[in-house]
Amino acid sequence: METIERALRAPSFVPVRRRLFRQLLESLLYEDALVHEGADDGRCTVHGVDEHGAAVRYRFTAVRRFGFDRVSVVGTLRRETAVSSEEPESVTRFLDEVRAALTADDDCLTRFAHELEETLVKDALAQYVRAERSDVLREAAYDTLEGTVTDGHRYHPAYKSRIGFDIEDNLAYGPEFLRPIRPLWLAAHRSITEVTVSADRDEAGFLLAQLGEATLAEFNDRIRAAGGAPADYTLLPVHPWQWRRQVTSAFSPQLRSGELIVVGEDPHDFAAQQSIRTLSCRDEPARPYLKLALSIVNTSTSRVLAPHTVRNAPAISDWLRNVVTGDEFLRDELGLIVLGEVMGSAVTPAPAAGFARGETYGTLACIWRESLYGFLAPGERAVPFTALTAIELDGTAMIEPWLHATGVREWVGRLVDVAAIPLLHLLFRHGIGCEAHAQNMVLVLRDGVPVRVALKDFHDGVRFSRDHLADSGGCPPLAGTPAHHVNANSFLETEDVDAVTGFVLDAFCFVNLAELGMLLADRFGLAEREFWAIVAERIRVYQERFPELADRFALFDVNRPGVEVEKLTSRRLVPDTEPLLHTVPNPLAVRHAEVK
Image 1 (cartoon, rainbow, N blue to C red):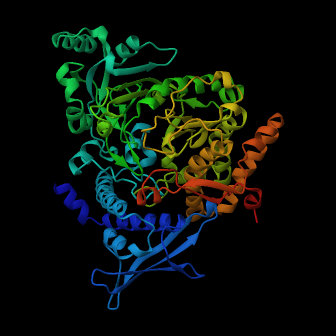
Image 2: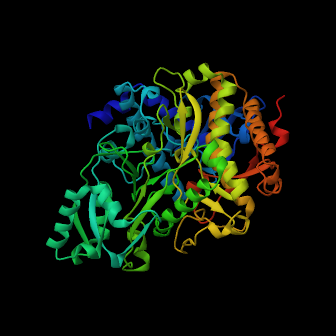
Image 3: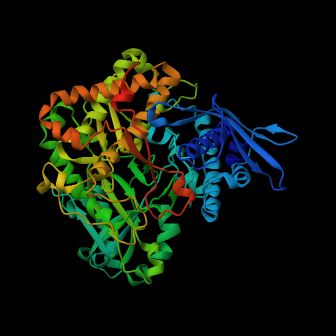
């Protein structure tokens, strides 16, 4: 408890609070969810009332950015009353005082305020511990960077809410704290478990490779000791938090009946990646990553693993791997890495009642994803895409030495060639959209120069129109989204081609590239308009190289004037019953991308 007290009193706390307010205001303004007065010079005022009914005003300065018309709040927010002007300290008080100006449901607002307060405390703790360790990001290996890049989502204000984790949980399992995690393994009876495996793997051999002969024999002995036959069970890991907080109660009937049997801990230590629920093996980095169901909410999303997505994971990975292997441009020239999800297991007992479905739906499942280390060549270094906008403790950008060595414009052009072009080629030639937001993409460099990328997280991270696939016969049959699945924006197939294109533009361009473009403008003098012109030019060069795809370029039009992007903050302010989207200007459109 002393650590959290020190973190809340440390100098690093105030910048975290300012960031929270900044991202809250930026997203509310961007999504037209906050009524305000605006002046030509960017000064904004939001009117409210305090708990006594007295007038209060919040003043700040906001500017429009070139990329997607994003909003940036600059300077410090001020709270003004008849007798004072000060920097606000409570985000909950802010939401209460400006309630009349917000587009929000009362119940959702209560929940959202809690998420913001949790984010404030958990990020303050992360930044304090980071400073105490004196982390130097540009010196860290990939798996370490997954924990030490502590920024989280740079748009969503509840970027580190982790609802379900208390402070001790956060210290034990948050990626920033680099604590070792030992997954617990269960034997699950096949009558209540769905197991899917990639075409080039077999379940028994795969599990043997993960656990080793001695551990596997020990686990099988425990199945027999419990009265079961090993052949009737599969084995899957569970996150220790999930075991303690969810599985022991939700699956108590199966534990009592012997359909679930606790067989022991994993023989190795793991560490949490940025996504929190994905673990990498510290002792044997080449072991597959474990993506484990975790019944917490972070940003807008529950972190369980819906069974239909677990079932689809190996099939989608096999499909994408076959597409890349059969495409000379992707395979040989771009060297695109597909981190395949090679096995998935989900425990799916019938719920005791329909209203209790959420207790077991997606709460005990695992997806095994290939480790990046088996794909890297000598001299290559990998960094999470989120690291490209990370700031070192000394205030410099992590990527600064690479930009100085190569030149900003040349480095950006190279990045576009190796990161954007493979995504667009998958879209144009093959009709496959990948949700390559910052956590789903890894940049591979050689001497600080981008050389290729790795894509990951496919189980619910692709979108396509089967009628517009280049090879619809190569696409496997996939499980559809059940009616009781709560995320309205979670689907793979659509008849709307624009939705496939928008899937790529929203995830990769609106998140990855827009954040990088703003960083380069603010710190390195590369105007956003010029940044997007470089992106557009590299796309044009690519398209000229493949004139036979002209019809596909028109079909999947990435230069269209408007792009639909999710209202991520509004999703927390109103009931999440349908996709919340708004159309914003596309910086890749010809009229936007010209250098002036």
